[in-house]
Structure formats: C-alpha cells, structure tokens
Image (cartoon, rainbow, N blue to C red; front, top):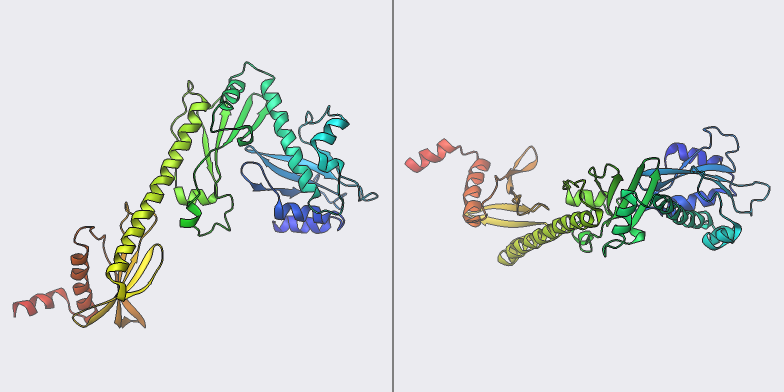
Length: 367
C-alpha cells in the first residue's frame, strides 16, 4: 500500500476500514493476480469516510468502481457505481440474488464481505464483456473467441475479454508446466507471487502485435522471450498452443541444464569427498593442496550452464592482501582436461601469491 493510500485509508471510517484492509491483504483479481488499488472519489476528501474508488485489474485495463457506504446504516451492503454504464443496467433483483449472493447476504461482521462481492461482480463483468463481443457475431474477434473455446488447452476461465469501441482484447492464460521451477529457483518467490503466470495479450483488429506477459518470477527465470509473428491469416486456436509450446520447451531446457549442473557437482563431491568444505545446489568449495601450497577452489554454476561455463575462483589459505585472502578468478575453463587446467592455474596462482614473476620463473628454470 502506498503512503498516499495509507493516509487515505486512515480517513475512512473505522466501521468500513476492515473491508479495505482485507482486500489489500487477501484479494487478488484477474488472471494477472494483481492487487486492488484505492483512490479518492473526485480527488477530494468530501465523503471520504464512507466512499472510495477501487481500481481493479482486468485484461490490460484498470476498472474503476466506486463503493459507497451509508454511515447511518453501516450494517447495510454498499452501493456500487461502475465505469461501464451498461454493466448490470438492466439486472433485476432475482438475477442479482442468484449471481451476487454475497451482496444479498451481506455480513457486516465479516471483513472479507466486500472482497467476496467484488469477486462475484468481476465474474459477471466478464460474462457481460463476452455478451458484448458476440453482439457482432460476424466479427473476427467473435469467431476467434468461439474457436479458441474449442481448443483443449483453453477454457472460459482462462480468458478475459474486453470490448471497447472498435477494439477487442483477449488476455489468455497459457498452460505452462512450472511444477519444478520453484524448487530450483526459489529466490524471491515470496516477493514475486504468481509464479505460474504466463499470459498472452491479443488485440483485434491488430492481432499481429501479440504481447507476452510473465510474472516477475517467470521473467527472472526465462529471461527475454521473442514471440513468433502472428500473421493476419493465422488463428488464435493455433497460435496459443504454439506460444505455450515455446515456453514449455524453454522450461524443459532449463530443467535439463539444471540436471547437468547437479551431475557435475555430484561428480566433484564424490571425487573430492574429503576436501569438501561446503556445497549447495549450484556451488561447492573444496580445500586442496599441492606441493605444500593450500588453496580453496570455489565452483559456482549459474542457471545458464552449460552454455555459460562455471565460474572458478582460487583462494589462498595463507597469503593475504590488505587483510583479505588473495584470490584469482580463472578464465573460462575447458570441459576437457579439467583437472590439468586447474593444476596449471594453481601453479601460476601460487607463484603470484609468493611474488614470483613470470620472468623469475623462466630464470630459475634456465638455471
């Protein structure tokens, strides 16, 4: 919650404040699972204690719905004012009772009551947008949506539809296989929720500019993904599986690379079992010696292995500089003759630690 919103929240009556606090803590709407935001109505403090504007994520838009409580009857459900005048404009009482039961059975003592109502209203808003889409049954967007619903990968709950003027937007959740990713790349998952969120945003009539929207976690893990061009003659029911396959292949490649990384570390640990100081899933530190020279070999393997080789660091046990152990980060090591390369570099590093220059090494050999 921003500092401005925190100040505004304190202006709202304590009778209604728990509903908003619950929304901030628990409610995540839409396929993007983004949090709801808060605004003043009209930008001033008039009536702020009982009314406020909620900014709700939907498709690529931000819906702005006003929530108005009555301080004289605080146990009553609030009124709503929507930014789409056609939404629920002709709904009768029976329809609302059936479709928004949390509003009809409003529980003033339950802080989650407002969040429950919003969740039900968002579902109705989605139905409303799909109806608007099909009002022009001959449109390309209406055809694409109907065809997409026949795809085994996509269901109605996986798509958000927004119709505005001459523009139609589809936000589509892609079925990516991320089951093992949190196990391998768990840094920051608490700060970046929605780890399985991969969305495709397509706009009509200009559907060639499809946009991939990844959760912060998937962005960190997968990096930049270049989408293939969606041609004018192409259809969503073919394009969605294509993009899904690209993402799943990328994930499979990462998991396979992780297996190679673990295998390499396992080989080091087995071979140098008595020299291991510490290790985890991507690094190991070994205490080694050669001709009475003791050093620590640090092996760090990144997520881009084997395309990017491990980073090897030699660290002296006895020699220091400015109060810190002398160290040397080695150039890219070859996969063949790994041990021979290390021994060669250790000999150079030992002489560097002792202050022996290359020319002195040549003289001593000549003598």
